[in-house]
Length: 189
Image 1 (cartoon, rainbow, N blue to C red):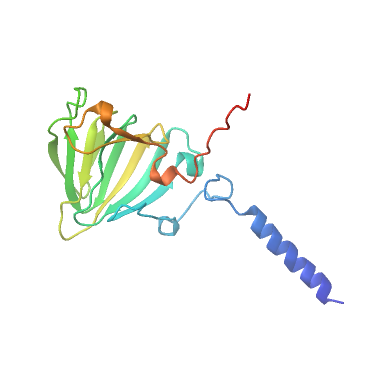
Image 2 (tube, helix red, strand yellow):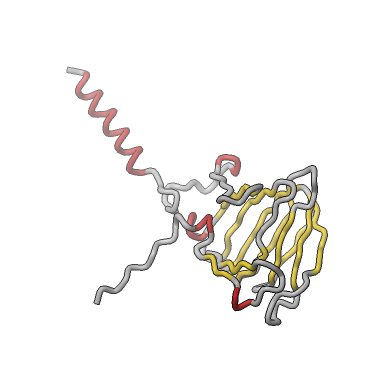
């Protein structure tokens, strides 16, 4: 007779735990304080990249900023790209090179300027400035904390620095937002 109430209680506890878990794209169920080492990370098919969304618009419900922790293995890099938001980097460890085309308002990015980046340095990318980050250190990972404004980010990628802006390819949602973007319902009328 005691087995049935025990089984019922076990079922209710299991059902309650399953139904209150948050989906990966829900702001419900996420604790205020989280351990970064326990957050999901992925390369999103880009060799040498480890990306963690520390706090995101689609993932956590933020409206004004998004924060990423990205690690680039030696020799890895971002695509040549731009986006319609500001971006701030804090280099946590390692070193590398920032390529920034400050004449991005011409018909194409043009030859970028090179800036050495290193642990404890910071830099910002203005809106729509074409840039690329490389881990040019052969011996150490480059780890950066990245803060962007106006999320979710819409990224325009370039094959090279002479590609016209009009030919840049839009990637939206970006890889780490794909699972959380809801496609708008089409009007059937």
